Image (cartoon, rainbow, N blue to C red; front, side, top):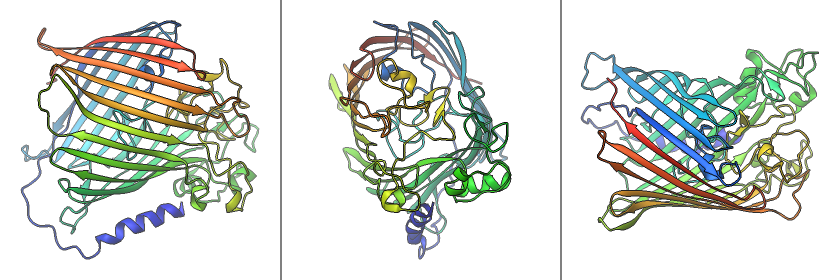
Length: 494
């Protein structure tokens, strides 16, 4: 965690010496809401849903099919401010229900929250969709630690809704941050009562309309507390819990206390820690914006010693600002490379920074069911649950993933066709090595691609028709060709 403090120091130092913010027009605070009804259907050649139809969809698309899916979402905010024109205080709620019917029908609630907002801050309780990290969240492969691949975890959250200006910097320095605590699902394969602690802090140097903006910060996630079938000094398998151990989990410090403390905790940390340290630079021109970003991943201390610095997500995004009405246009493109094969090397010797390897991303020997929620990877979907690859590839003991050493090349594009049809494609090619202790022989290659279109029609007050075709070709997943079709109606809620 010392590297977090050092990063914050480097980013905060430029604040010193700026003058008082100049007077400006009072800001009016608004909230974007989504209210809709949607019906979808999926199908494939072998009863399995292609990767890019079900990945990064907040766990709402079944991995098997064919399936029928019905969705409804309602979100609304009321002003509590005396000055209703500015909307400084707002109170609201959101609910989204997704019902899927296939061999195992389900009803999911990816959003169910009550939210209080003050200016550009919010406090909410419940489930809410969230993306974490400096990366593209629409065309990209997904942030390393928190990608939107799993159902949102219920939590108590306080933080900003956008970048907020630091006082006395004339809007040249802004921050975005949050602090939250939640709880994982019941009935996990190896743990019960498992808790989540999560926080993030990012700084931006440059005004919102500056031609050059610099970004930096970190996110930190911890699985802690609860009980484990594999570890625990008491007969019921309880892991270190309570407020003093919570403070160690939050700070990421070595230590802990209580009867349940064991050698694993006292020589490592309380809980399973992971996240990324992110940096980005954005350049704005009249024609387009350019974003270059890098996420350095950490899990077991190797990054502090720079032995795992090769691992991470690197991306470049180009977004056009102007459309010229051509029959075919590319309006946005993202190119990414994800590399997680180093992990600090193949040797782990505690207390030796040179040999602090085997980071074993998304696996943990106490939290054997790993960085998952309802058997979905919470982080990048390219570190796959064993349940998706065990049809052909060996298990890694009884850990969550048997494939966390990957190299992925990813391309995402979107644009318009005939000025009325929006299209999008995602093309990903991966080289997969398994884990250090259970390597895949032959380094299976995998291609996963998707092409999707949608168009708005002036019928029934406005409908959106959607369609997608996707394929998985290679050695990691079953060879799959599939589709998804749907219709959506957006509406206003009063």
